Length: 157
Image (cartoon, rainbow, N blue to C red; front, side, top):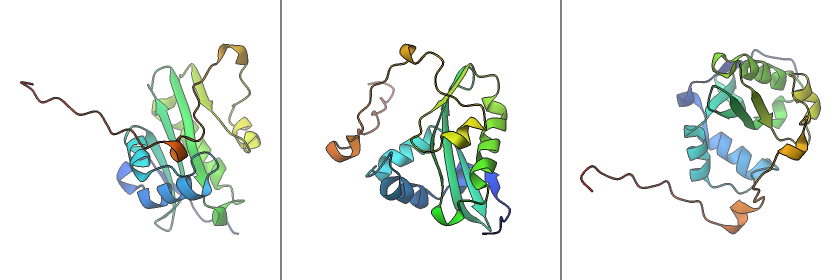
């Protein structure tokens, strides 16, 4: 495939939520079965990067961060029919160069199959893996219902 220009935007109003949900819930290995409400909530609380060709979204990534010391990169994908054309590298360049993600002490991600891509951008295995811990529920979308957002208290309650 000839590489056409990929326009990358962090404008959340341009994100094709249907596309992102479909990809994550049906095609990804890390979020199979994820409910749409969970995807919507994750997008609302992340810095999202959409990759667009001719006005159609073909790539996505999101970053969860405090914008001062830490960031986590997740849900990165390029639609299968657009892979192999350098779009994942272009997307990663935009993520790494984003002004709000500069000067972070730690930028993390998890991947099963894209170590080569991320290594090009400075990611490596943890220097001290013995210091890292996680709470992981890999089949959460198969075994539980999404937790509704907390109810906001009205003043006077």
